[in-house]
Length: 401
Image 1 (cartoon, rainbow, N blue to C red):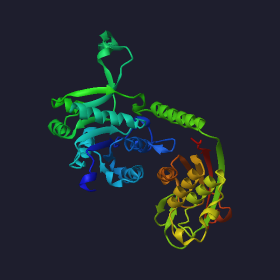
Image 2 (image 1 turned 90 degrees about the horizontal axis):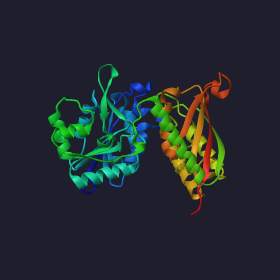
Image 3 (image 1 turned 135 degrees about the horizontal axis):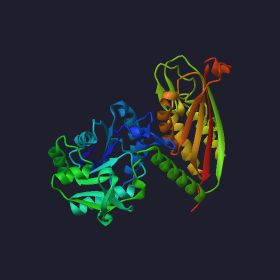
């Protein structure tokens, strides 16, 4: 990246927590809400801010590669703006790792919890503006609306706390970079509740600005369900405000080839036989394209792209899906949701289903649900001769302005 393009803002996205209270198999940042992980949704907000920023993801050592791929897809045209580092045993250590990865040109640092996945981009913009205005620390916060009691032994109420002086703080929290570096260095191994506390402990001022109710922290299964409800309601309202919806189906079948070079659902499957075809043979991508084209009344993948066009020789599934979405937009449609089922004995799809789902959803720009099944030994898939994929897609008309 040239000096002229070096951003002055850095955003550390903390995604290294285990999320034990969610009781999920994946670390919390990688748990999904409607087809997208909390980390992906957080990064969507970060890359929506007005000012360019360097983004550092702090991830568990076990999920660095997955975090890097999620970050790459979120960064889109500016992959040079994102980095991934391994987190520490504590949140304090994780933020320190993120600070160490920032470019020297960064002068304002925002620290954001990936568990606050629905935080709107405008809140990041507001924090940056407030740091510029004050030269001190800035945290978003909401007024405390519950009655607060001070209690003693056995739960006895000792008094009432004046809630007018209280705020429930959120992230992102923003700071002048040189002061935050110094505050963390001075803190040593001491633990604080958040970055503002580290900053204040070193003698610096912190200001509270208006927070946002969407910036709530997803900690429990109840919070996760709340996030699901919000995302679902948003999608429903958006659909209602737009044109009519249409449904299309698609099917794609490929036989196995000889080389160990399988590409399926955008992922490479080492040690698995490739699928024969003019392109990379990604049956998931091709079935999805057929379903999208069918829904919009644009034909099928063979008619649109051709089966022998040299321009598509060995082309990846991503090219076909992204071009299909572009063709839909030109025809006045956009994808809403799709589901694709893989039918075959191999590869073992379940361990990588979420990774594949994230990948294909990013291509389409809308949630894609993936699943897999076998035919109990029946037919060509049961005999291990190839793979079939069946897709259903929902698109909607974009109203003319």
